Each structure stands twice: as structure tokens, then as C-alpha cells.
Image (cartoon, rainbow, N blue to C red):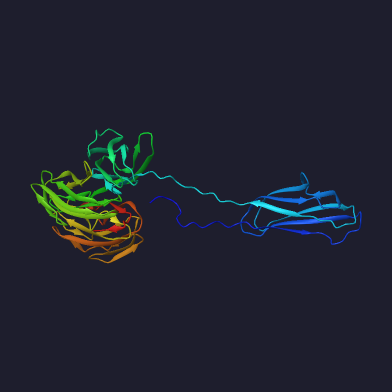
Length: 475
């Protein structure tokens, strides 16, 4: 719709008044003083205010404040602009030189006007449309509608559109060469006729793309239209966590955590991890399946800020240093992501400590359960073994349960000694703690007491990480 005001309201009009005061009688030869008061009684300024005074009859001019200008037989005061509710005073003094009446006339004038603007609108109009949001590697269509809103035909119209870096031209209807800026020529446009141009582009990288189209006539007017499209891409974070140490032929649980750190939805999120030689797949959570030595998960959609965790369990049949690798792929992510975890499987220790984590990493404010196993894999009985578990400073509300009484000292839980631990048997302890501060930490576990021959008991140190909370957590 053309710009303008169709129901105008006139601005306020200045109102300027002039009042003259003078004595009613004066003696012959006496001084006679006129007081002229000019007042703006309106709410708007009055411009170029001017007071004119005729020379009083039967008198001689003596003085005036302020000093007037002489214009023939008149005295003139140019007062300039008089602001709303403002007053200005003029005094005029003359000498009465006769015995007749002294006649005097004063007048005030000012300027008042209005300024208007009328836009001469072009009969050409252009409207551009497209998506407001898109993702990297998306293709979409921009439409340009060219209209003749006048009453006469338009001829030889030139349409141009400038593509910023990061957008690739694909096709258009009607066709164009594809050179930037894109150009089309419309031979004729009848009155009220609309012609549509459509063209497709593809986004190579994220960013905010402002595109501007225009239509013009040679030697004539030009009209423009623009459109902004924000292009984003999924930004995922991948963490693989698992035990640092494990005994041969003991199950080891690995945790995979995926976080969508972008403001766009990630589509078709998939995970996979291959089993190394000598490693046996045992189980997987969240619909994970093993096929030909590879475990796979199809997580589907991951919303902005969402976090998902899955786990899988393996067993190594011989001593090794296992480097377990997980791969993540998703639509619009190119090469995807990888994460690794190294676990040492040992087969010669007669007494071992194992730590299983209910989840790793743990989210801020989330409680975690940590299961500790003291396992006698040797042939001799262990007498009076105890256990001490110390949680990192990033955890609070630490509690413990086990086969013997537990005592707490800050983040350290001490379990009293067992009478004995027979060969092939294990003692199981449970620690619960709540994550209170993001960051990495170490869980330290130590067997108290000694083995046969006075050798010290085993120790274990396992890493754990606390992640910031997400707006849409999903476990």
C-alpha cells in the first residue's frame, strides 16, 4: 500500500494577542508612555512575529525599548519566534506637543503555514519471499513477484537479485545464466499484471543471508525488496567413557553421551562402535544392536539442548590395552564425530578392584551410583580386608553401603574390615553421590589391610566427569 495520510489532522494554530496600555490624560508638553504587550496564548510557537506602530498624532517621538526600525511613518519591531505562553513587552514614549487628542494604532502579525509531502509512487512493485530459517546443505526457493499497479503498460523491465557468498544458485523459472547478480528481463507488464520469478539456491555454510532484489526501467524508477534467511547447522558433542582398568574375562561397561549444543534440530543421529580382536560384545542399552562385530544405535532426532546417553558391555578374553572408538553421524554434519577410550585389561593380579558407574559422565545436579567390587581372583584367603572410597570435590551428598559398617569423613567413605574374603569370591560396595560442580575428577579406591606376605592391597583410580545441565535433558 502506498505510504501517506488519508485522514489528515491539521496541526494546532498559533494565537498571538497584542494589548496596548497608555494613560488617558496628559498635560501639554508632557511625556506619554505606551506599553505594548505581545503574548502567544497557544501551545505552538509563532514565527516571524512583527509589531507595527503608527506615529501618534500631535506628538513627537522620544524613545522606545527595544529600539524600533523606521519604515516611513511607522515604527516596526521584529520579535522573531514567540514560544508557547511567552510574552514580550515594548515601551514607546512620546511628547504631547499640542492640545488635541493623541491618536495611536498598533498592530501585530505573524506567520503560520503547513508543509505537506506527496510521494509520486512508481507503478512497479516487487515482493520477495523465502524461508526465514534453514540448515546447511538445504535447498530452497525464493520467489519474486513483479506487479504493475498503474493504468498503462510497462516495458523492458530489468530484475536483478544479488546472492551473498555461501549461497549457490541452482535453477530458475524463467531461466537465467546464473551469474551473480542474477538478472531477468521482462518485455512487457500489463496494468495490474503480476509476473513471478522463482529460483533455487543451496546453502554451503551457516550464517545470516540478506538477499536484495530490484526491478527497474531503463532511465526510469527502481524498486527494491529484500529477504533474510538464517542458516544453521547441528553442533553435536560426543563423549565415550568407560573403565580405566579391568580384569580379563570381566564385563566392562562403556557409556556414550551425545549433546546437541546448537539451536537447530539434529536429524537421523546414529552411533556405531566396532569390537576389537579378542573382545566380545555382551549387551547394549536403548535399542543398540550388534551386527558382524559392530554395535549400532539409531537415536533419530536430537532437539536443541538435548542430551542422550547409551551404554554397551564388552569382555576381553586376554590381557590387552583396548582403544575403543565410537563414531557419530547425523544429517547435515559432513564427516561426523569420533571419540575414544583406552582401557587396560589385566590378567595376572590375584586381587582386583573394579568400579562400575551408573552413568558417566554425570550431569550437574544429577545423582550417580558407583558400584565397587573387591574380587579375590587368587588361591589364598584374604583376611580382614577393608575399603576406602574417596569421591572428587565436585560431588556432594556422598553416602555408602556395603557388607560392613561405613563411616563418612567429608567425601571419603571407609568400610570396616571383612573377616575374610575367600578365593573366587567378591565383596560389593555401593556409593551414591550428587554432582554439584562441573568438571573432571578422580575417584580413588584403596583396600586396607595386607595380602599374604605383607604385600599392600590394591588401589584403583578412575576418572569421572560432571557436565553442565541442559535445557532438555534426556537419558
